[in-house]
Length: 482
Image 1 (tube, one colour):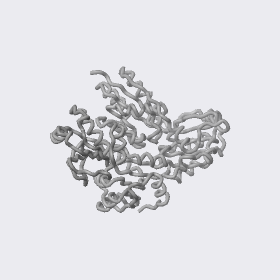
Image 2 (tube, helix red, strand yellow; image 1 turned 120 degrees about the vertical axis):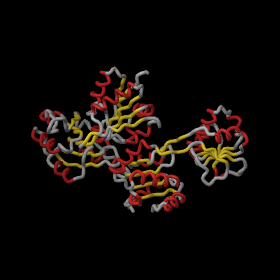
Image 3 (cartoon, helix red, strand yellow; image 1 turned 30 degrees about the vertical axis):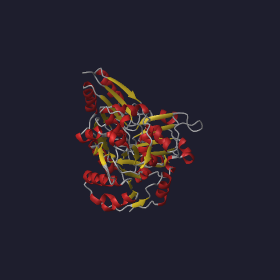
């Protein structure tokens, strides 16, 4: 058996899109991913269906997996010939204990790579409108851990050099030791009016900030609901925030949205909402299951006899052409006219070199083949390309996200998404109708609205052909919850 390889990957500070291209590529080929609590779990959606997830979630009061056990697992899976990803928040080399893991792998002669990531000490200030260097405000910058392994948990730092020699200081995970940090900097010469900002969940839509000075921030923090993960930034450069605070001005900043899924593909609406500052979680995670059945083989054996093909989804379209390839069926034997149920499928068919027409222009129902997961209300013979199932690997992830985050909005983009979401959430949390209390629920289209009502879910109906600009206006003008 050939030996595997381990990638020690920085997931970035929280915003899913801030992972590096190499980090994403490594996730896509991994056999096993060991991930930390503070990474954005939506990054795991880049993994294949066969990839195994192992939660290494360290909490302040307990450790799911101790570091020694994590090291052992990395060695174990690599020796089984696996491609292993150790996914760590921020940059793995900045207070990420990557040195310990790399040393363990090197000691066992296991091949590994360190894939850098964007560290929170730079990214969180940037998303708060604060560059960490500026020619007029700060030409030196330091990253400091705000706790250590000692009995007191207080870092051993040359406070005099730090106070007098560094313009801007970023303390990681410093909330518990904030009074000690402020006292130490003041004691060693830092002015009492030096600006300080606490940045919790930096780069996320739930980002929260608290400003003060070395003299005031500790008492302010006692009253505010701010906890780790957080960056404590100290320095005059914070004054720039007043003019260049960009992220918190995004129109949907602070929105926590659950977007119900009915497809294996990520919804484009999610990316658009994130661009406007919202946090969006697509739930549940679905996977495609396909197999070549006798019924499918029978249909394929007479494929040239059909006059009309109706493609009902992107995944069905891809699976259909894959089935043709696997069964060695010459595409030139197909004489049918192609119709599509939506614009997305039209684009896919065009990419493959086929001319297709929208379903509203269909004029024949003879020898018609519906290509998809199910027929819905369309007449004709069904070529069931696949079935969709819930990916249970994400159950623990979604449960933790829903329990730890105050989601204020639920969006049902299709009628199929209503039942999938409702059944999944009820099974996952055993919460019943109470889950929808104090949340704004949006149904896109009449059919979706009716399906939500059938499930005793009260929702706001918006047009099926709505675009992101209109949806943005809707959010801005309808901020109330149920």
